[in-house]
Length: 460
Image (cartoon, rainbow, N blue to C red; front, top):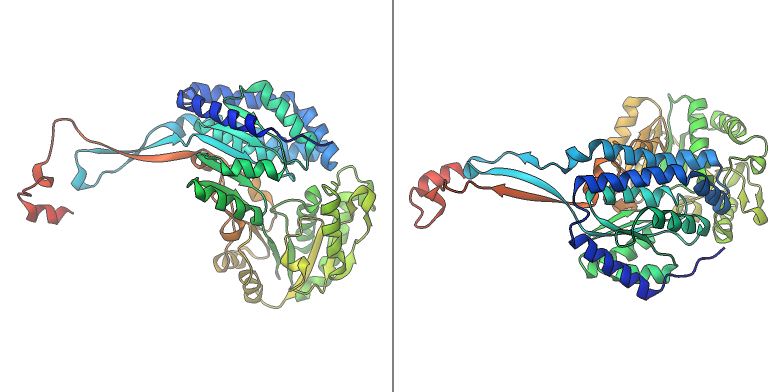
């Protein structure tokens, strides 16, 4: 299945209609925002089977994984915003310094305006609709651009959005990078982009021409450190789950493993057991094991299998775009498998002797989107202090993204800005500082000829 590019003239017309709609003030009332959030919440229930069918068609994602990693996350985000929207919209009081008394100081959260949201293919429902929740709750309009690499999902989302929203408020456009180029060249009040660091730079360069703010949710090589004191069986099970979730096509998947030299043998054994527990003796026959998104992705990830010693896995089936969960040893740190984001079920393992050595290895590379540590909590916090990443888990993987009370986002090469919960509301809002002065009372000290200036200097 392939989708036709939305014509350039239609994209321009939609953008103009959304600009006029936002300027009408229709999106500003709290009641309107709540109604629109509830429409999305209801649609996620009504369209659940169709969305799950589309995810199976594009990625062979099981209904259970589709619900857990896509639909339920968006539903939880909607509920969070409905619960707190009134509080987030209220003017926020701030103290006024002595020099401004008796004035009052407030922060008003106001919608930025027209938002463009561009989503990737790996979690095509969650990563398009979760940012939309922030756009709706903040009072913005939104033009949505799903990935063409998951065409069944993109087409289903377009029909769902058209059913619940007028296109001058929220609409979907389709297309390849040619359409992306047109979109990024247009003037928006915010661009929210999820994708690779390379494409993120392209988006940022295009946005700079119009001084458009951006939220960039990118990726990178998220390290997983297993130190002495870790429960090896638990670590192996959780790492195996995080690495094979969506067949490793997850921006916060453990990308490579740094393990204390003394733990390598026991980890390999427990990791093999964990994979068997999760996906059976043959993961290709498992109903819960996702496929690579397309032939190009399959060929790229399969190429990593030759860049180390295969300890576990390694089987492939090009016709099925299947790659068996694979653990590699002896990978050269300069090889592509250790330089590029893997985005597949291949886990290279490197030994270390001290925690300081592991932290130094991480710091010698770009700042990752996530960092995972297994071992004593005290040592874990020390690793966090020594390193930098967008988010982190101690004695777990991936689960920080499931808490919508925590901000999610990258740092440095792995992203710019953050969202989820209140941070999503703020991402699409302008926090406007306001001083409210009394109408009659007016201190003469600020006016020329500055009588009593020596007293003014004392309070400034």
